[in-house]
Length: 126
Image 1 (cartoon, rainbow, N blue to C red):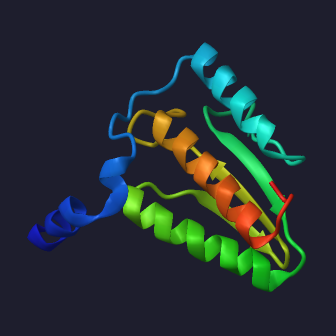
Image 2: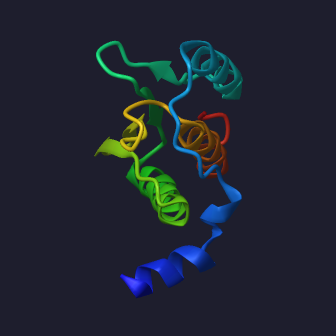
């Protein structure tokens, strides 16, 4: 709709990757290696699909919800939405780009920001 296009043109996602091409295996492995420097919980490749996942553990539900709220705002800004599952203090996140049926630069950027949010909510969580 016209309203959605206006919102898209005015939101912050223009600062993020717009190309939705899938990363090569080498690019994905390099991205995972870089993301793994962000703390004890690691982003991993998923065996049965072209996606990456990570489980965050927080002190309590309030911290998990705060992380999810920050991540939801980012998802709207990027027009790129994670798959996630939450139980109490644990949030399992899966990232993939459906437009290219694989992991894209958008997923890597979102993973980096989610790690930053997790560290803001619960330092040394990432």
